[in-house]
Image (cartoon, rainbow, N blue to C red):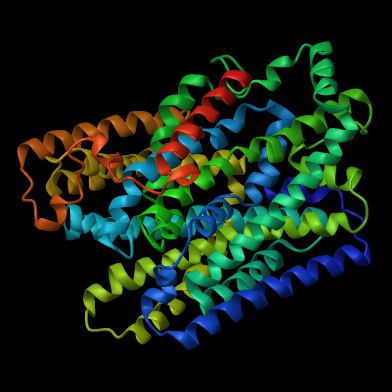
Length: 550
């Protein structure tokens, strides 16, 4: 989590050697060049809009999984989780370890419908299941979420980190990163995004592994961590599930009640994330991609959260100086004290990789949503060539809007809590509409419309109460607020659907499971690549991890 920009004036400036600068420059030139080359090469081979927005439906499961992971992971995770690890131990690792459960839901229940219907966007799917007004509303909500959550928070966090590391002006960083990322996204479309994201994931993990390995070696391994924490009476920092009176302000019941609401929206119904699944080669690749991402989501607790805790232990052991006055600087503090020349540049490149992967994915999703769900509705005869051009113009516009919004993120005392809060207020009506739409045949278009309208209005009211909490006195944790909002949304759609029945079309009839078991009838691939086997394995691994660290 980050503090307001003003508090970063005293952040230590890292000693950057020429070798580090060379590493960073080579990375930037390589990733932008690769993205543009992929896009231009694809453009020469095909001018169809689906090739630009959905990579021509050619994505395989490793690419999908890596792209899902890379789009999700940003500088917010790298930096904020390090601070959370330093302050609260592994508690906020719940936001990573709960994700595999919702990715299993994506693989089993949502991905098959998305691929079979061959929709270009999730609002398109919502129209096929419900009606046109639902599509329009979700398109607008998805664009707002992409600009204000995915891009705005990421740009600000990355800029603040670069300011602390290199002394670069906040606005210069925001504009520079946005322009470089927007360049290859505009030129190359989704194919450029997923190819660069796959490479960025490797770089990101390399940088995170370096920090983790060096700090783990310095602290004396797991035994050194446990002995030091036990000696200071702080073994609770090694647990992920906490009581209501814990200082982390993240009790176990808030995790289990609130996370499924935001998780299902994020991993199953958010265009920025799910667009990688929509571009899958076939149904099996669409299923395995999210499952692969689910296994990757095990890593961030050890690569992003644990290093922050190790840093805290190293300070307790006296191996690092006790001069970290602002814990928001934890990641920069570790880079400065633990990494040699050259490797600092690699980790800086990892930070940029995380940031650019998130921003590029969100920009491409915005272009797709606007082109397919808004512009083409009013101009149905628009050619593919013009649609791609419109998408590129919208990408540029979204980038400008995010640049303008991102400095306002500094209003939040904590960047990570800020982004979670926004997700908590946007997610409930969308999660309710998608869940009931896929599992309940009687869920009606009228009920879905009413749920989206009223649920979004309630979410806006709660957001304003939280934004002006000093004046309003609002103190409900966002994770509990999202659960209560979700319950209200389910009740609204349930009663409205019973009141006004849904008139199913041949297309909508195929987008509802008659029972959850129907989703498992597809045999899938044989052997270890079978989606059923991998789903059970991933579920079992997560249960074991929670048992060990609970």
